[in-house]
Image (cartoon, rainbow over all chains, first blue to last red; front, side, top):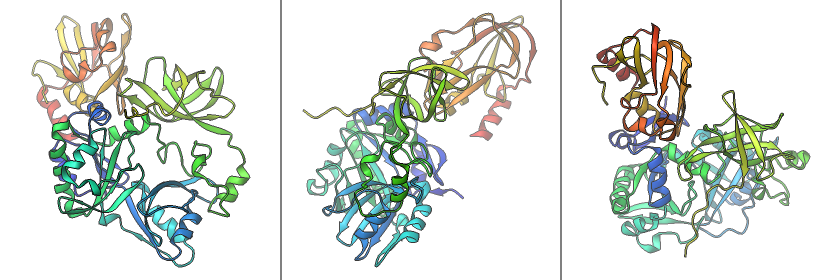
Length: 364
Length: 126
């Protein structure tokens, strides 16, 4: 049975088109449509319900030791309220999931996992835990809203004290308050824009959603669905589990090498990654030159030679063109070189371009 | 959502407007454009091509999906609405004004639905 977030009724009543995703019934878009929702985030602000994401608490004297054992990134040297991204590797060097970990205190960490991987990840943590630690799946205790776009801060300032809004990227305020509702307010996102992710108790869901929508009205806020979430993350070239990484693709092969700390004494998957050696494939950015939209699972050719396949692809509203990411043999795929992509039996000319496709304008 | 009375429909969400003896305009319905979302690309046949009832003659892509468009008739394409290739979003804005092809010499047809019958199907699929 598909799950619903506490905002399901609001999504339906505000014109959300509902699809199944990661075991949840979620809005893929609202009345404005993906293009307008996407552009609202690039130019003003968008509000997403991402309550389908899972949350796991890692608590105990050996909490840090467990993070460094189970995750590939290095979790030493974090301050309270800091966030750090990491892939989770399996023993073969493939990827179980990717997560964001927030440090609550020396003995407590808050881990955010992908919706579809909630139970798998939780079980993975239990199966690999060491020493004195307790992992708890607290997903049902939280809703999560993502307020994303250049106006996100202005909107948040209308409903929260400045001291409750994190100033730096990848930091959060654990005891934040939005009009009397307790919230974790984090400066993170999956859109390539400035923005915040806000966690709160399920009973606050509707009130918080309506409050942010009202506060954002003067700035042109739009409710945004999973469609725009995907076009925005692709335009910002952010990897997605199940596309750019999976059980068989190692993080180094998909361009996440900087999150793999091989100098750590040990972590799950380290031996396999060492044995694999230098990656033979790499992740590239692709721009269609011919007509058509490149999607995932399209074969990529360099002349007669098949060099890889696409992992994600869509029409990107900001550029108004078809952009894709793909995994290809390392020897091929120089930036600027021409390739051909098989779109349902039709070979379309394309070029390899630098990623990220989109970078937010730097502040003056 | 609208279902103009004067048009004929197919269960695969195309509309047909009979414009004369053995002649018709063909497009996709309001329901189809709404289900697809923002349309960003369209691949149309060429003038002179033959289309066959029940077989794909074009495809439309929205931001989120690609969908074949099936021909409701067996006929010859005499005109292609090339304007849609540059501005596919017109299909979202005006699905019944945005015909894709004009055909003549219709020799066979799919089973057509009336507006009321098609509306029932659309309702079920919603």
